[in-house]
Every structure is written in structure tokens, then in C-alpha cells.
Image 1 (cartoon, rainbow, N blue to C red):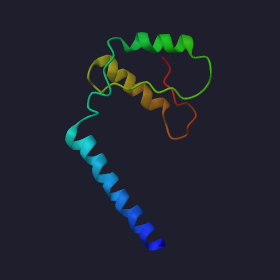
Image 2: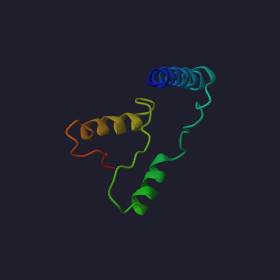
Image 3: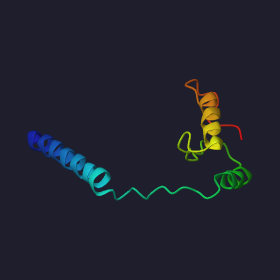
Length: 92
């Protein structure tokens, strides 16, 4: 009985891996899951005003070098998001 459970679990894992590969890579179902904001600075300002608790809030980073402003943000983020974990959010 134990052998059948282990084989079934292994087979299920392989099927899940193949399904996830097909959905994410071949079919492209999640390609439009993330959209670019018209004004990310305005969204960030509203979030800063309304989020009072502590925690980690992730704002998608722009593609590096798409514009001068985005390149500056990426450079600034690299300075504060080090491996020491002291500061995980860039100063705006």
C-alpha cells in the first residue's frame, strides 16, 4: 500500500509540473496578469497616505532603463534592498 501511495504522489507531481509548464509557458494564460500603471508615482503616493501599519508592500519595479526616471528608481532601489535586510523599501 505504501508503495502505491508513493508512486501515485510522484506521478501526480509530474502531472502537475507538466500542467504548470503548459499553462505558463506554452499557452501564455498569465501574460496579461500584470499591467503597467499610467502614473505609478500617484499610486505610490495614495498607498503611502493610506497604509499606516508596518509590513512589506510590493510595488512592481519598472523595467530597468526604460526611461531615465525608471533607471534612477532602479539605482536607488539597489542601494537599499541589500542582503542585510535593514531597509527593504526605497525612499521616495
